[in-house]
Image (cartoon, rainbow, N blue to C red; front, side, top):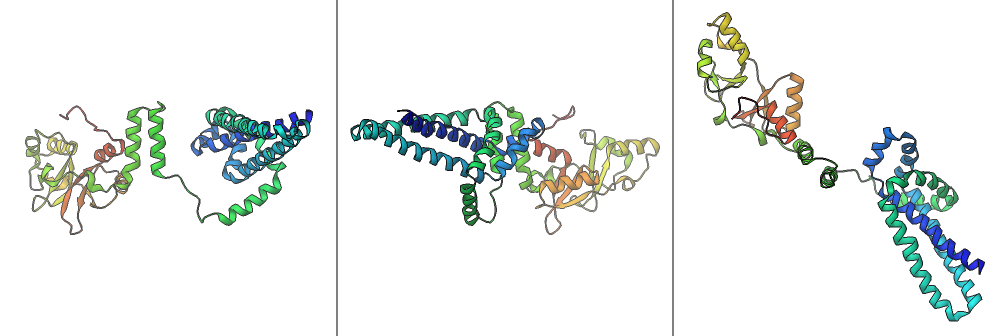
Length: 322
């Protein structure tokens, strides 16, 4: 009877432990592992090599689990046949199968999947022991895995990051406003600048021949801090002027030629990615760019504020906006 209990214990307990370990290992996400690098560096150092080569711990777990099932069930069956005869062997096999299924598969895997964060520390301690005990089988598994492995490992995609953020919003980890901003930040690098370009017919401009002293009256209903300046025709963008410099010039010398105040404007192609334009504006310390097609025709104007609104998914307004 003692041997029967021993074999049943091996079959269920070791398998229970293996199932918990497997569920925990497969539940640890790369993002969570990265988050504990600073908060718990000791645990991070133990888990990182295990999860980077996840075939090793999984091979050890599955090897010992199979060993427990096989040896335990075979030994227990032999003891039942010895103690009670073949009459009860079939009944015992059915009962043991259900016991293994429930007690060493369903319950422990549910525990591991639900409480994996709490169980990571003991798992990080136990797994190296499992790998050491089953090293020959682990080595064989690694050889087979390398032979079957594809050229590149799967990497985290933007869609997966987006899905994680959406789950975080549903679970209350981040606010809806944060999710919308994050979603915009993920999508904006794919978009071209034409997506947010202000069309030429909607742009307020001033001809370069405009007298400086006349600008305040012309701009009375327009509170822009930067005003595009046109040349020979309406869409001939020569640059822009700063409203503050215009006002200063009027005070110092009302006859100052407007051309003396014009600053060159960054020109970009309409198919340029938003992130590229954003980088150029930041590098040049500018706030405005003109957008052109391949033939050089003006397609519109884009400002740094437009890009930031696109990145954050917000409509930024100040006191002068309607």
